[in-house]
Picture 1 (cartoon, helix red, strand yellow):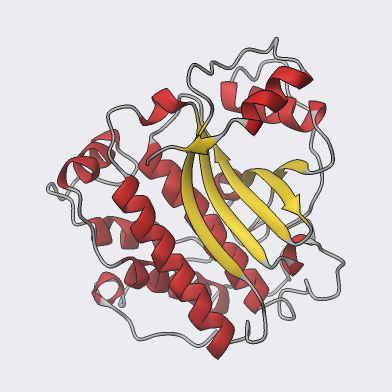
Picture 2 (spheres, helix red, strand yellow):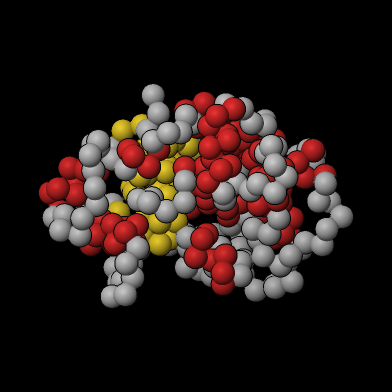
Length: 285
């Protein structure tokens, strides 16, 4: 993909050496873009989400998306490891095992969805195996992928109580950018020879999915629209001017919520869980 000119969000890091991991430097770009009131504040902090909600403004979303993509691409091009990424990246496969001592409600809910529901749900989809450190690898996995119809998928960052909406949004958007990068570099990454249905998608919906109370106290509808418009515009340009030329790919982003009153319980059966997923709605009007 042809790189755009560097913006103010990336120029300040131009002289730093690039790490061998494909996501290195992206957090710094995001924090710079947010222009937080306190220099020590980072998007991973809950106070950052509170500030963003309160002030109702942020930087240009297209510039953010371009900077993040260009950083991922630069890290890929300057990596020390010449071996191709893992062929497991972007697999469409259920991973149903869960350690008995894993008490994470998100992990329990994720596994219940893939265990109880049909073949249109898979989980723990790797996006950057062989491209990140072992620490970053788990964060780069997509919690859930839902096949809406052939060639149309939801990439879902699933939350119950951990982190906050801003953090979740950034995680799934970065996964979306890794996907776009993989699509644009399939031959170099040795993905083009695999029969990978995810890498043939026409539509990808980036979603944060959480109980309605997860969003309580935050006003991020404006942020959702800006971020979604930014990534949609970036992809629309890419399919006209880059390695994605000729692709029908479209991408958007939304915060979504389980029905009001939803509280995850391991006792949920198939029908109750399916009803909860059927009742998912936009988190912000």
